[in-house]
Structures are given as structure tokens and as C-alpha cells.
Image (cartoon, rainbow, N blue to C red; front, top):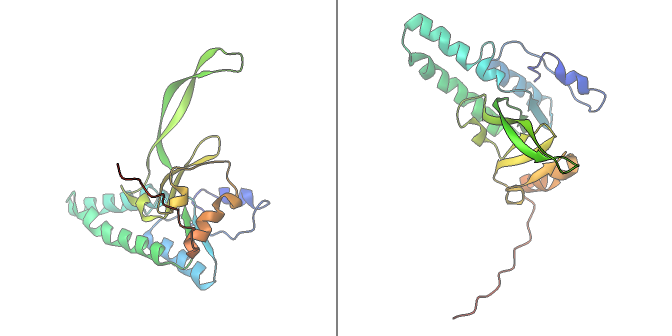
Length: 200
């Protein structure tokens, strides 16, 4: 799914993929496209970005706002939204496809000191990624969560795969994720030898 107004197609000369561009980010639309991908036997399903299903047209915030206007109940909209959101999440988790999503983050900037090649101390403005633009905790539904830096480093934030815990991958390519792919397949890991301890 391309929610970024055709930006994915700019990579068509580098990768072979098919695109569905939608302009209404309802859970129903997400599920319809995912179902179509499954029926067509795609191995991988990517949504760039799933943040639109929170803050875009037809997404969570707009849905809740419309219910509030009708009922004048501040909580009614969220009560109506949560089952739709849960259905969307459950469909992602149960999908036979490998599901990859990107999320925008709320950013702030801070001043950071660094030393340039001439040994001079300088200050530079650095972007600091904060919470993702999605429902709180949404990211923990996935097996691997990473933050991409402006230098294209992938910083593992959270994972269920022990081999990736705490990793930082510099400009990662497909080969960097082979251990994760093998883990998803259930590849056997070599047991870590345990050294006997001596009694004091």
C-alpha cells in the first residue's frame, strides 16, 4: 500500500513490486488490500506508511472526531474505533504474508556536540525521533521494530529474535536480515555452551 502519493513508484527501477495507492485510510480498505495480496499469493505485504491509518483521511482520528460530532460524547468514538482497529491488527498478525509497515514519528531536534576532522569541537542540530504516529503500543504487535536514522542506519528497538537484540545495522541490505528470516522459519540455533562454575 502506498499512502505517500506515489512515492513508492520512484523505486520501481530498483525493485520489482506491485503497488496499490489508496486515498482513504479505513481499516476496511487496509484489510481489503491485504486480503487481495493473500489471494494473489504474495509473499510480502508492505504498507508505507501505516501512520495514515491513524492520522489520515478515514483514519482513527477522523473517525473518532466524526462520532464525537454526532453524539457529543468524548469517549463514544474511541469505543467504536477500538474493535475496528483490533480487527485490522489481528488480520496483520494472522496473515500468511510477511507484513512490513513503516510509521512516521513525531520529531524534535536537539543540539549535539561533535569533533570535526580538524579536531575542532562543533555543535550540530540532530533530529530525535519520538513516539510513532499510531495508537500507543501499536509497534509492539511486530516481531522486529527498528528506527531508521538520517544516515540510513537501522537501530533495533525491540525484537523477539534473540540474534537481533540491541543491534545497529549500517545501511542494511537483504543479507543483513537473513538471520531474522531464518528465525521466522524456525531455523535451529546452536546451543550456547554453558561453562560449569566452581564451588567456592
